[in-house]
Image (cartoon, one colour):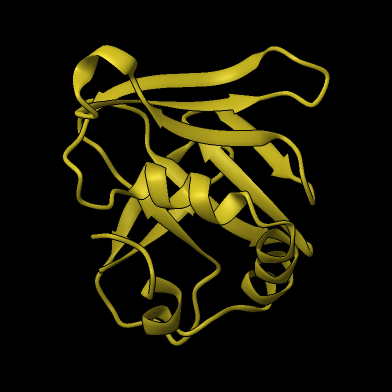
Length: 136
């Protein structure tokens, strides 16, 4: 299924018809804000609820680390501003299996990935190609 993400309202609607090209990927959660990573105007953008950030080559810093006293079952997903300070933080329970937030942090650590996705996703990518490497 594809979703049509409304960046002004931070909401989505399902799009049942097959689409030829997509511009991003989203994690839709019933009890937490949706997360959408997309290309727009040759810029990679990340939206979590109403918070929308442009992802530069190396900032903001995105991390996803296990909490020390949880045996790796609880993780902290964090987005930090280049000048310091936390822009977003979420603690969640996870298994050792890959998950969306962990995959996002791992991919976003690579400046070349950020740059290439910004260009490719702005133009549009085949849905199957975009889903490769993302858990779900």
